[in-house]
Image (cartoon, rainbow, N blue to C red):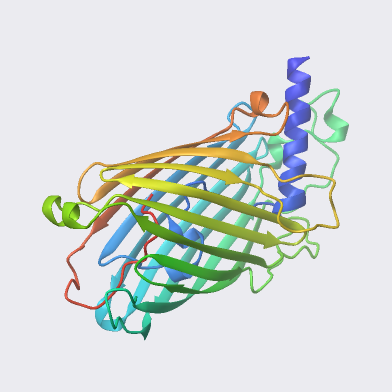
Length: 346
């Protein structure tokens, strides 16, 4: 009975992946650990460089593998007012290992649009960005069971097996405005609308639109940071809204930073747009996160997603995510007038 129920849930979740995700839409709970996954405008946001790795294990109680890893390196070059980055993503879903592998180059340009004329006024910057990427979808059909194999899975299937891999090229663009305490931007992904069908059909990715932003509220003076070389205590509110095809998703939450500790709480999946197809609701979740700055350059974070759909949490096991961020050359360009994007580092 339990095995049958798990198989049923697996089929439902596998269908949801195809129905709403254009086969696979990548998302992380700690997306500000690898912000280049949000928008190419985040390439090189710090003074110096950064290496970031995110690992996500989704629905560990469900048969099959639902795991995603993202690894990126980016650097800001103050003399050129430019940030560059490299981003690699690998995602595997289900017992058939429905896979997505991506590798891409990102570039952003930073320019000032307003001067700081008083203590109350803020410098504002605009940062457009682009992302060129090579992607490949894949699936292991040998691990799937077809209709003519239900009675005897050991027999070969008579079903025509399509392509195992489908490569394509894609492109994304974004723009972001930010100051010392605020940021907001828009990103458009899958601008080339590549064909990602494994059956040789015409199945093109829908363009994905993202709106993101946030605000940092300082809770004390900056004396603590100057004296102890730490960030000031603060609360940062942030959101990330995504829309593609007939599906939308909103991540809304806040971070509390008390260097070296970071705590966060998020809510995912608020339906903020009407959809013509309402056969499925968003997969809502409550997310809790804790981060710690191990050294001046190294941060680690952990988050847990608790699915709040009735009768689903106990069968999926939620989701676990770990992030690791290493910053280097932080003093590079310290005399340059370049404001740091105030989004959280974890």
